[in-house]
Length: 212
Ligand SMILES: NC(=O)c1ccc[n+]([C@@H]2O[C@H](COP(=O)([O-])OP(=O)(O)OC[C@H]3O[C@@H](n4cnc5c(N)ncnc54)[C@H](OP(=O)(O)O)[C@@H]3O)[C@@H](O)[C@H]2O)c1
Image (tube, rainbow, N blue to C red; front, side, top):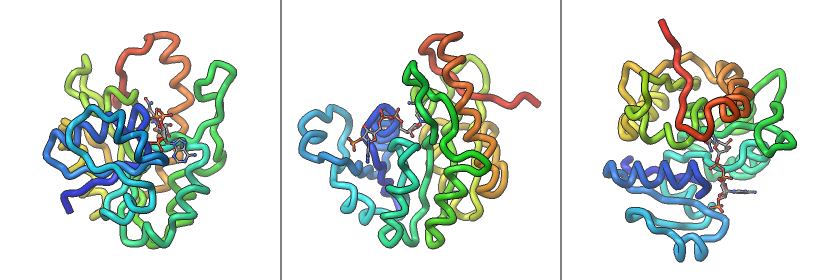
């Protein structure tokens, strides 16, 4: 129960792996090339495995891989993911000419909903996708209180994700449970703000926040 598996070792995967390991979690990173990652990893102690071994090593799996191809990738892992909580932090966007999100891949629905439909034995929870990766693990460093949204059909799964968020430094008051996985549709559309936010603010940590 203390182990969290993260698939993908890019900016998000590395940041989450480092923060959770430092918080006392046992962290497994599932990567396409374990030898390469082992030889370059400079963070705290983590276990680095191939994707299939990594999925089999815990019942909490985080999707930190490209969102546009996540549906195919995770559908292929349906059997191995049965009984797990899948924490989906990805954004399924097309790339604009600047390489930044240009549009949504799954219009009229969301990746979260499609993953849940494809993985009926897995509890999908969408979270953390509405901020820059640097804010995911240092929310208290932002200049004002941020919001982290949770979308998912299973309350117990969301309670486990809340614990993971707490480990990253998220205050309970900043967590906003939007309801079922269908609410991922709204938060996923927020990815379309990213290019203009980066253009306006620069590459500074940011997170969306709901003032109330
Ligand atoms: N960057 C942000 O600020 C941010 C914020 C919110 C949400 N997100 C979302 O978080 C996810 C990860 O973002 P990122 O910025 O970390 O991306 P990234 O730096 O491009 O890293 C993605 C990682 O996924 C793995 N990967 C790439 N192609 C793959 C494939 N075909 N099959 C399996 N694994 C593959 C790679 O890790 P391995 O080589 O180890 O396999 C790669 O390093 C994306 O869905 C993104 O939309 C990002």
